[in-house]
Image 1 (cartoon, rainbow, N blue to C red):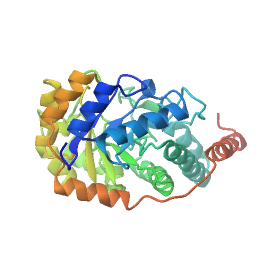
Image 2: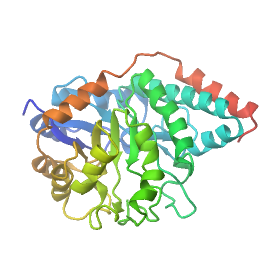
Image 3: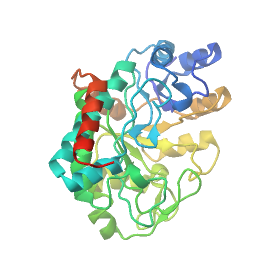
Image 4: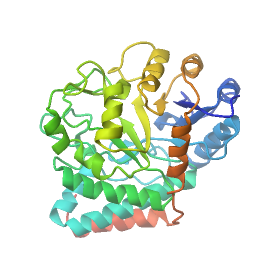
Length: 340
């Protein structure tokens, strides 16, 4: 096993790690594990799964991510965990009472972060900073705070800071913006034809405002004003736009490479992400042959990526709160504002 982890997250089909998977992870040393709803049944099982992955790769702090935004995207929904509201609902509250909306969102983010940190999860891959319009693909919908980039940035800041305070890593997504995409990148390749001026003034703006966030997830969306052929996640041109034009210097991880916006085999997709200059390819599910193939296509993390990862870890706080009590307090705020 190389001492430097591979620039790769792997996934699992089941709620346990088999002996063969354990051996594969020990041999290949992927940076992290992505767990979904299928992998998380209840707290002790989730903790055992996370501990076993970290044992396999020999790193107690190996990152383990999930999708936990709130609303319809929360993979901690099968066990005894509270269900969190969508960003769209917090936006509605904030439009009625901006200060109350921000306060509720900060507390909810702290509750969610504390819940994940207690389980051993490193991140819920949140918040979503994409704009939403009437034409936006339904894959975004209530996951967004709305169409106003400044409003999104203000609410997104509450999520980022609330998660950091509780030791959970925020991941802003889907940089540089999925909101103008009319197609679902899980199923097909969206193309955004907006001008550079339009994108800079709107879709890119929340990501620039929160560019100090330690991690960001890159969209599988074509921005034809910059690169007419390749989705951002595999485009060297868009890598330069994100790093130079937008000024983002944190960790850049692709959206899941299983999504159909990308083309080629899974190993080819891993290579495309890394060849474009991004730090990490996300392989969020798959069986042993798929994970093995992805690992063979990956390469060790660069020195620059390792430094970015360490810089992000240094930002994590250790705030301890009762996440159930905090979640209940947030619900009381909604009830007092008569927002359903």
